[in-house]
Image 1 (cartoon, rainbow, N blue to C red):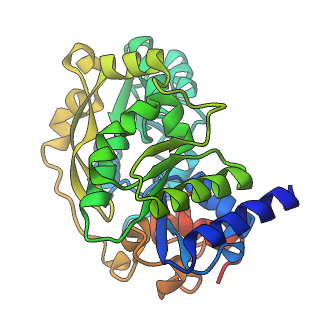
Image 2 (cartoon, rainbow, N blue to C red; image 1 turned 180 degrees about the vertical axis):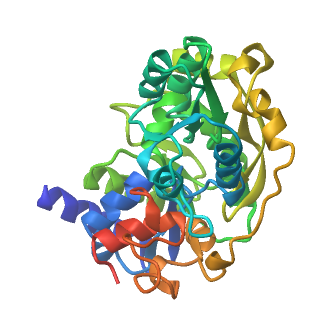
Length: 352
C-alpha cells in the first residue's frame, strides 16, 4: 500500500509541476479520511484540499433548529432525531437541553426506529429529518408506510443543485472530489449538468488511496484542461445510480428553495413533502404552531466562522474560537458538533 501511495503522490507532483491547484471535497467522511491519514502532509504544497459543505448537520441553518424548538415548546409531541443534531446549540439550548427540561426527545439510529416508537405510543411522533440524497429514500419509504401518528419535519437538502452555488461563488476551485455516498444514489449522470463549467469532478471512495486517486485524476484533468466527470468509486457508483431509490425519493419529495448555513438560499435544494403525503408533513399538520414563529439571531455565534469553513474559505484553525471557546465538549457551531464536521474532525485528530 505504501508503495502504491508513494507512486500516486509522485505522479501528482510530476503533473502539478508547482502549479497551484485547489480541490474541494464535498463529504465529511472524505475530510475524516484526509485528516486521519494526514494526506495533506504528503501532497505537494501547491495542491490544496479544501473542505466543502458535505456535512448534513453542519449546513442546517438555525432557522430550522429554532422551528423544531418552537414546536417542542408549544405542542406535546415525541421528537425524534439523530444524536448529532440533538447537540447543535442555539442560544445555549439544544434538543438535549429540552430533554433535560422534561420534553420527550428521543435519539434514533434510523427513521425506522422513530416509526417503531410511533407504533408503540399514543402520542404524536415527529421525526426531525436531516440529510442529503443518501438518507432521503429511506425517509420516503417510512413516510409511505407508517402509523397515523408519525410525521416528518423535513430539513433535508438536495445536494447536487447546491454545487451550482459553489461554482458560481467568487471562489477559485479547480476541481471537486464528489461524495461517494450521495453518488451511489444519484449516479454519475447527476453531475452531467456541471460539464458546462469546465471544472473537473471525481467521485471518490473513502479509503486513503481512493482519495489520492481522485486527486490524481483531477490534477491530470486540470493539466489537460479537461472538465470531465470521473468515477474513481466504480465498485459502488454506477452511471444511472440507484434508480429505485431515486423513484421513491422523487415520489414523496419535491424540490424548493433551501437555506444553507454559510451559503444562503440555494434554488432547488430545499426538500418539501408532496401533497399526496401531506398528512405526514409536520409543517402542515402543525401549521397552527408555526404561524407565530419568528426566527432570531444567536449572538453567541457572532464570532463562529462555521459558514466560512463550509465554503473552504478558511480552515478551522483560522477561527479564533477553535479549541478555545469552541471544543467538542462545548461546541458553539455545528461544525464542531457533528462527527462529519470539519472542526470536530480536526479536533479529533489534533490538527493545529
